[in-house]
Image 1 (cartoon, one colour):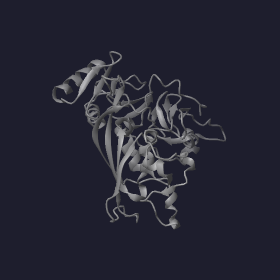
Image 2 (cartoon, one colour):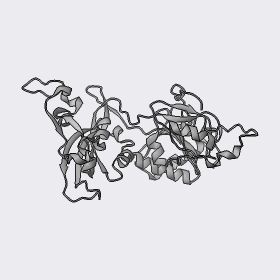
Image 3 (cartoon, helix red, strand yellow):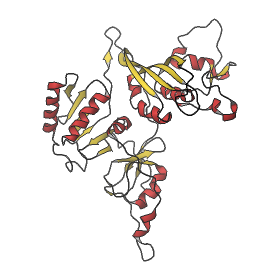
Image 4 (spheres, one colour):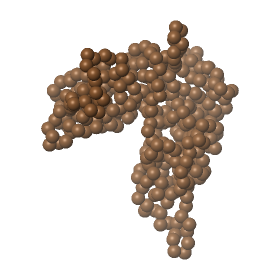
Length: 357
């Protein structure tokens, strides 16, 4: 991750240590006792590249620093890559992910025989003694063996989360087995299923929270480092864009009443925001600029107090771990002793679009 000086309009309001010198001295002190940490200079004098033993390791450091009064910005987490000395190819870390989840959340729906057992990127390496038709026209269709249930509850055609989540992040299934017949989920869905995947470490960023949400908190995810393998290509961990504030000011209920239809909001009436701050999740791909500070024009007929009973969806609370998993390459997490905000970085201007509400 990249640690840098906070340059937002709210910089210096809440923190006691805000300069690059304060940041460097604190990181140097951490290096004296934290042997698994590595700090390198960034692209500028105000940036430091901090490497550790995973996102949790660095998140603990960030939390300790904000409690001590530091205020700074953090970039998205990245993996440490290598280059093969013989071939010159780019290598990235891979891990074995083991998921234990009730069978009703395993995955599947209706899939072709070869789509299920052979990952797409491995299919071309296999040879068969007979010609294979396109997967869409294969006569052999089957249902996931662990999701075969009575048609009365229509669960046999559900789009279940674990297989979809892991597949979208370049995960290749290694093994799957049923652990027992006891119903641990409490929902009548049967016993647990253990699914093993080989997946790039990049694909694990933000996966844990997404899987807990998709499985209603019943999934247990464990990972084991396997080694470095060739780069597996781009991985999309977030399909939706961000709602970006258009101006600086206090959020109003009148503006949120119309803005909340665009997605899920991070802010509530009365919160202070600034131009470029991420105030919510857009319901579609791409960023959308919105005005959450717009006020009703009061007249003799329309009074400003009429907004007191506006029905609003409660704001989504974003903690430090949630924010680090949410951000992309053009976003930063603003960390202060009192707040955790998300804002657009230097690369954000090309993505902003849409009407200003």
